[in-house]
Amino acid sequence: MIDLLKTTVSVCIPTYNQSLFIEQSVRSAFNQTYKPIEIIVCDDASTDDTLLILNSLKEEIPILKVLKNCNNLGITNNVNKCLKQAIGDLVVRLDSDDVLNTNYIEKFVPFFEMNPNIGYGHCSIMEIDQDNNILNTRILYRNQSIQSSIDALKSAVSGYKVAANIIIFRRSALQKVGFIQSKINFAEDYYLVSSISEYGYDNVYINQVLANYRIWIDKNLVRSRRKLSEIQGLLAVFNEVLEPAFIKRGWSLVSIRKIKKNFAVSHSDCLSWNNYSFLEKLEIEKMILNLSSSNQVKIVIWLYKKRLGLIIQCFKIPEKFLKTVAKKIVVGH
Image 1 (cartoon, rainbow, N blue to C red):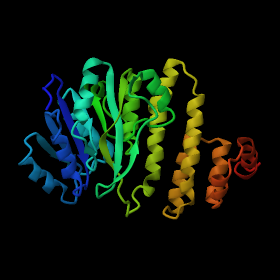
Image 2 (image 1 turned 90 degrees about the vertical axis):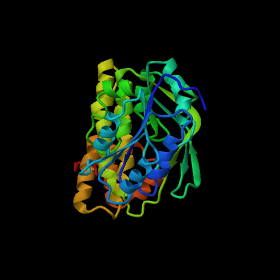
Image 3 (image 1 turned 30 degrees about the vertical axis):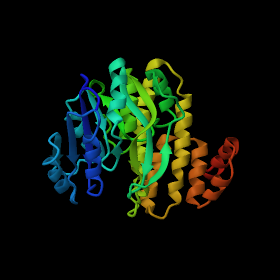
Image 4 (image 1 turned 120 degrees about the horizontal axis):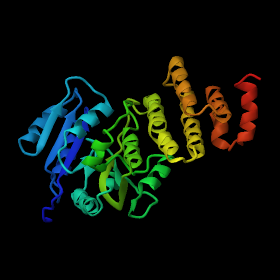
């Protein structure tokens, strides 16, 4: 056991229908070598036994605080509600099916104490399945280091640069950015860390496995049916955080436009899936074109709608060729 340092830590666990995993998640937060002062679980009107399990754990874990929403708020609003309750100097955001190693908090506290400009910290993680079997290790191609806010902003353009959504924040940084300003129920963590970087905070990455991230079987095809929310979330990150940040600093938007086009192309494959109706596909297509309306994206959309996606997967189609075909097929000239 380490000596108690001055920094206080809260663990926030937003949850919804996670009766299978919530106890393991809470216990991992409680069994830290550096003890948190509170564990806050915000239940988003679960319909399973999540709340019963939490109420039972409260009798054993005195620092556990359980909040229950009368109505389902959705991911972003529930995460925000949970984070705003924290009183610790640092706040761990932990999903209710994920698990912290016992030394997770202990490893991060010294970095935050030595550098007051660190806004958030993240680490390598181990992927586990629903039975806690090890699947894979996720690491970043980055040495253990403190990354400047400028470098973080520039790298954020190409995607969410953490191994998983298991992050420790400085509470004052959360307060200064107004927590998660997006109302979209996807990419909320991507939005939040980008906002913190935009504000001028650095981040620290520890290249050690300090937590387990659960990959579970999606029997009800929940993930595949949230494509519209995924694209809306990406749009919010780019349009509301990254592009304004680049414009503010006088940086070129060329890289952002290129990445948005790449995201649009990669998400277009869902237009060939059978689990969306015709009207749903129209809505998704419209959102994809909001990401990028380039000729390349238009022809890729056309190919997927015509069930010719294999052409895209097997060949790297030159953009010049795509522009020519797009004018003839999509634009109608």
